[in-house]
Amino acid sequence: MQQGRTTISKFLIEQLRGSEDQSDLAALLIDVTAAVKAIASMTAKGALGGFLGSLGTENVQGETQKKLDVLSNDAMIQACEWGGLVAGMASEEMDDPYMLAKEFERGPYLLVFDPLDGSSNIDVNVSVGTIFSVLRHGKIGDPTVADYLRPGVEQVAAGYAIYGPSTMMVLTVGKGTHGFTLDREIGNFILTHPDLQIPADTAEYAINSSNERFWEPPVQRYVAECKAGKTGDRGRDFNTRWIASMVADVHRILMRGGIFMYPKDAKDPSKPGRLRLMYEANPIAFIIEQAGGAASTGRGRILTVQPTSLHQRVPVMLGSRNEIERLERYHREYDSGEDKPFASPLFKDRSLYSDDLRA
Ligand code: F6P
Image (cartoon, rainbow, N blue to C red; front, side):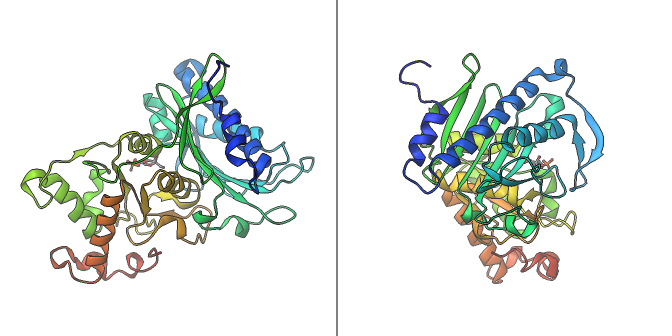
């Protein structure tokens, strides 16, 4: 290691020194970095690695699994199951929580992850990522599904890796949000982006506009105003970006501000949002809040939503604080009927879209 450079292990040990989680949490996060390096190596090989394409199977969400989804899931399990640090693991790619093999000691944490977020981008060589969240288990023995169903405020650590032009890890243990870049020559993550801060204001928003007709009126109002730019109520121009890898869109927001929305929509009434609460929304919300941003369902803080199932979906709006507060105000005004032009009966009258997600 070059002098003066802070490796991720040194950083974590220093951040956690004297805390309840001291060495165990640092050790677990270092195991996660081992999985991330393995996934980074597979994604970087592209077509040469023979890892691209679909497996022909579906995950519990009904999404086609890519070879790399499954390989990345295996990499996380292999890196983290043996060390006596986790009691169990749950992933987007597994219907039920993963039960550790008998020979492994049970540890104090539950690890929840999305091994390859944005995997539809893999075959077109666009950035993808891994998202993870750590909860305390606090019990003896193997966890049940109910043990995982804890609100995001209880996370003790969360982070993501982004496999882009460079591989980075961004994480928090509740003491700010920090970014590390993989130095491939030495095989280690080096602190390159300490204390990330999201500016409170922005002129950039990310949303999949093809869903516009399915959005709720407050989101339609917000986006309409952004699009009107200088000629509308906002009096200034906005810019849009949509990568379709949450990790990549969130990373841009951490680097230069902005907001990301995957709101509730009426496209498929069985899904109150696209993103998963436990292994996408919660860890990213923790990271965003620790960087001074805000993360909301539109009707409440994501981190206080009580999960009712492992693979639950949730509306997500996060990033620059003042814009998220504006979106929450638009939802309040719509719900109270104050915002007449946007109070469409389509959304108001359907119980499915009314109260269930108001945290
Ligand atoms: O499953 C999650 C995800 O791939 C996110 O990473 C991304 O933001 C979103 O889905 C993209 O959704 P869509 O394909 O609807 O744009």
